[in-house]
Image (cartoon, rainbow, N blue to C red; front, side, top):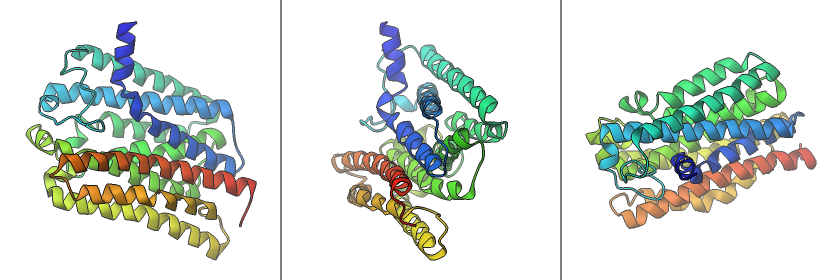
Length: 306
């Protein structure tokens, strides 16, 4: 039983809430366009959570092998689970956590290929490559944050829509862009405390390659772009009469105060006492924005404005 608890902790369950809000948003979009199966939504959400947990475990495995985990400044939001360097979980068991959760996610993926259609295969393959190769390969290339943005942001939204409807739609791709940016920025800001350890470990994260000041500016620019994208999509809806994004999705602007806290904190990267709260604000901003966008689609379904 003790081992199972440690295995569960190795997936970093406190961060799997991201999978929940992604499932909520993707399913809300599908319901708005006319398709909803509660069982499919729960199963797909569980599959994404398994995938996310697998990535966390595999990341810990490679970080310890490369020596990065022995040099990081661990925070509640970055630096890994700490179970391996603290001697609580053997290295091989961390890898097994990654393997077992990956197999579970794969089985769920196969189920949805059978019930929803073979066109789900390319999406699953691309997402798997993005996430599995992220730590051992992609992090050694410039601007690696695009990978989780795509694999754990854009593609899940499209995937949740597909398992409900059996098809893809350009409006869903447009709706998924904020998720891609937000997940990209989740990784980007969380890299700030680890920059020296990442540099020693041969990683080429944005803060390592371009410097903390430039990385902070990039983070703030892309955070602002999320709001610009949402407002632009709503304006396109009002102008064209085609629902690119429901007017109710402007509710996402309520997360702006959290975004401002995260952006301000990104300027204080030299002071951990100010940076760590910014990491927390960024997490809450990301979760809240997904939640509010999903509520926007639900409200438009119940009380149409367009």
